[in-house]
Image 1 (cartoon, rainbow, N blue to C red):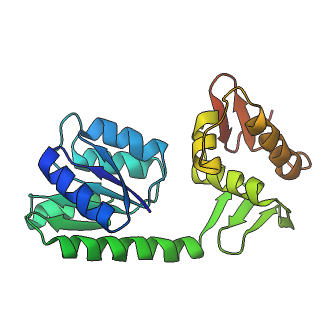
Image 2: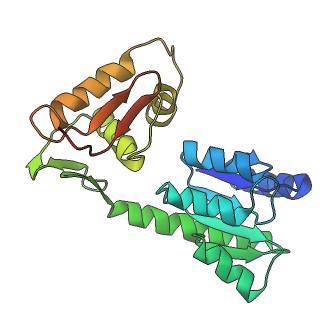
Length: 227
């Protein structure tokens, strides 16, 4: 389970990272808000731990930016700002929970378990949609205009990723890292091949077309007016 830790105090960040890794979590660190926001919007994480007072972009701004991208990752704000107004500001910006420093590490672990458990339960009933295309995460079903579409496991994973990032351009490298969870020759056409597989199944016999190529940039799944 991969966690993004956005904390500018090196000692605090190192302490949290060490403790989480001892619990078999994988932790990626960012020491300022701008870089943290970049990681959060370009990668998939099970949870984001986010300090409020950060250089370059504060935690409230980071949280709002993540939510504006329609990214539903659980966000735990971890900060010394503990007034009621601070908590309300953090939660209203899109955070799921708010833990005030100093804290007991066992309480941090308990909150992480609760947030990730809730997220996993919600994913189980999640239905992703764009136009008349629907993907049910739990049932592993896909429908277009109410008609069932049969996909392979890899095609389903690719479509799931595109839907999770609908209206956002994703590069071939993004897809390789997030869907294949590996790296291979970026000159390979495997991504194009699978995009074409998907197009034949969800776009060829339907309108409007939903998968679009942006030359030199990547792909985007969105509904566009066809003229």
